[in-house]
Image 1 (cartoon, rainbow, N blue to C red):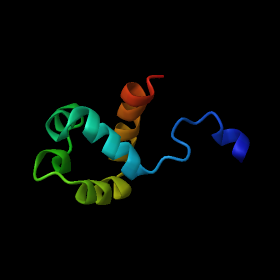
Image 2 (cartoon, rainbow, N blue to C red):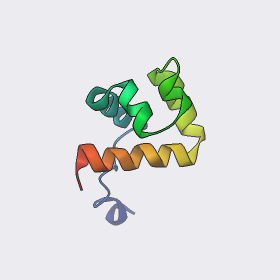
Image 3 (cartoon, one colour):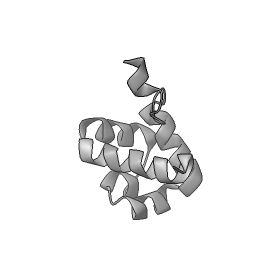
Image 4 (cartoon, rainbow, N blue to C red):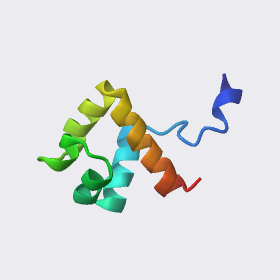
Length: 74
């Protein structure tokens, strides 16, 4: 199993780390423009966003893809 993860740039990163880095990079307003999710636009916060992202696979996928495009720069 470790062989399948060594090339995964998200391996070892928590969703909270990913979200914090995106918020630091873009800010909530721009993040809400890039990914149209209510929890990024109305009274945004890390805790409420994590709760939503952990239960909504399509939203989590979009956040991870944005992270890979901007922070990791694949």
